[in-house]
Length: 76
Length: 76
DNA sequence: ATATAATGTCAAGTATATTTTACTTATTGC
DNA sequence: GCAATAAGTAAAATATACTTGACATTATAT
Image: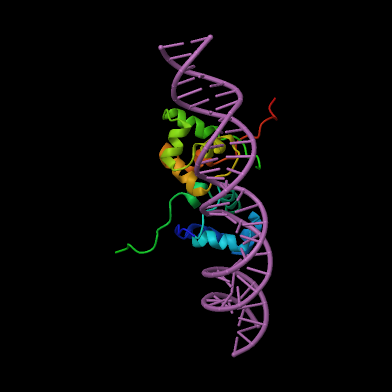
């Protein structure tokens, strides 16, 4: 419910591996809607889920979840 | 409820800064019991809370939450 | 030995992450 | 165009992160 910022890094990492949201969700043991909500920044996964996502996508926590993503707007 | 493994890295990082659990909890905006539970591995913080902890302790996500801590036992 | 602060733990409640079902809107290929 | 798959969104239910308050234990110091 609290907006967090879209996670485009996951989307990109998925693209690299040609994985669909559904496929990633299944690989990670979570519902498709949950994966979507995370990419949309609609909430705030647990560290465990983050670790699982990183493992599947072959990225580090810092790479995928390191910085809060931009919050829309405030661009010149 | 699901055991996760104690997080000794947080404890160590706290020690480096001579910070008490209470102090860290306050700095991070969470209850003392929650911080304790996380260090005890009694649950599974949100990525947001992890980020806040890292910020206060001056460590990266990978440093503090990178690998699942050992699960007790299985040592020669 | 006795204060005092730091830590560990438990139970009951509240907030919120996650699921399920279901419907809509892209997107891609035929 | 049409079918099929991928992605976005929503509401109601369930699981679990987190709070509050209280008490027990382990340091640390005087």
